[in-house]
Image 1 (cartoon, rainbow, N blue to C red):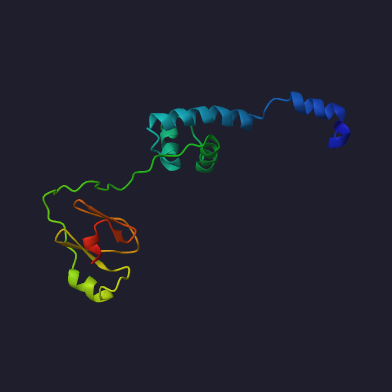
Image 2: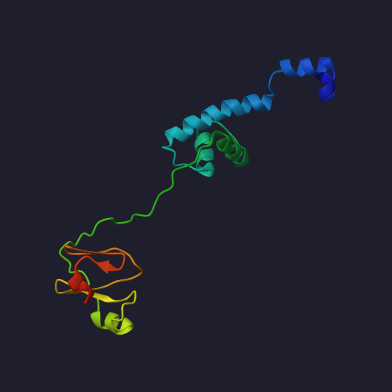
Length: 151
């Protein structure tokens, strides 16, 4: 085995039995402190703020070293997301009605993808073979379920 690697037998066994370097041992202790600080700060602190947090606790560490150890531990801080309203607060607001004149003049009611369907007194344009839901009438794949709507 030693001949394959091109090392002496005594050097190989010394390498197997050696203790990790001081830097490696220091990194392992520091990783534990970083994990504790990361959890204590609710996983919101990045490298810079975490560095000052550790400094307040008496642990002096450089930002690059801290970033490297955080990367090894796969620690990431939580990102704030923009608030997005998911519901309409004004449920009584009237929805916009389609402008029938612009749709009927586009295709001339010739059967193209923009043809207007007259369903239950309401005019609905059809676009790109998509499904449309209008009150209780469903238009699917460019065809209406009600034969009167295709007239």
